[in-house]
Length: 114
Image (tube, rainbow, N blue to C red):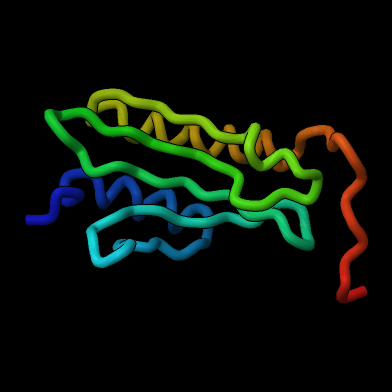
């Protein structure tokens, strides 16, 4: 049984709701993370989940790349019991949504495709 088996259905629900792809491995080890786009042309955010341990789980939201150079400032982690996992995922998704609509410190660059 996967170390993620108990929480996989909740992760899959959020992945489906966001219409994204779930990654289940990183460096040949089990993992759970997905990406969601932000403001075009380049923004990208990641939500990742640590394997549950002792009935506790951590959810991470981080900016992979932003148009205004704020990637390092946009990083949050929530840790709680497995019973609170769905709520932690909701908060992570809401946090990333707020990051997407933040005031920019500098204007977005022009798209190279326009």
